[in-house]
Length: 348
Image (cartoon, rainbow, N blue to C red):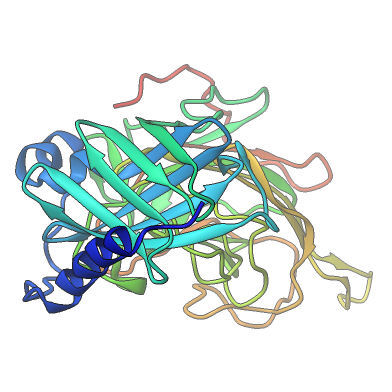
């Protein structure tokens, strides 16, 4: 189906309006850490997020002041139909009264959002109606496995050096686990703030350092291309298979299997560590070899001189929060002396 000249002209005017409208000044410090408050204060928060229809998905990213980027994905949402290699198109949009109008750069894909429904017209002329949905990780609020050591359950920060707790959540203050580990399975839940005016690494930046050296990145990377410095990336080492980051102020999960570096009797390293990572329950790295001794701001010595190291939660002047952190140490390493706390926890 081809678009009529009048149709193309109307969307050209919309596109011109996007470029000519006076932009509100970006304010990186506009930050929300509570969903209810964000919903009350900023009407863009209510519509940003994920939309799904028959064989198609869309991720709507709030940019502040009624402006949005929308990513249209053939097959569905990441981890639910869309996979690398399928088409992905970017639209830009702006709020006009009660509606939000979006269009791609070529003015061949359009979307209108009103009353929680997105009407999408693709380049082939097909029309789709998408509904807003809220996905959650398949491992959120997971109960600690048998043999787990609970590092944080919302009641105490005793397992952390430089730990700070607020409203039952562990804050991103550069907290380091008091105990060190070799091989392990780790479960961490985190929540990035809603910072619509912020861009790039200012948008809810933190990270989890495994053995105190290798970082799985935390960032509000919702909707973006996967990179090693976006959420799910192993910083400076590996790009995730796909971007499984959920919208800001959603509780998200990392489930990690970490295999420590190997050393011979003389203390010489004979194998790099390896890591398998699931973000929000979806596999994004499998048995990835970590072939560097350190990453930027790693809290312990840059030289890898042994298999044991702490879990470190990076501080980056962003109000990232954590909860429900537990670890299952491998059987082949020295076990923590403290008995694990296996009491189920109610999470806030």
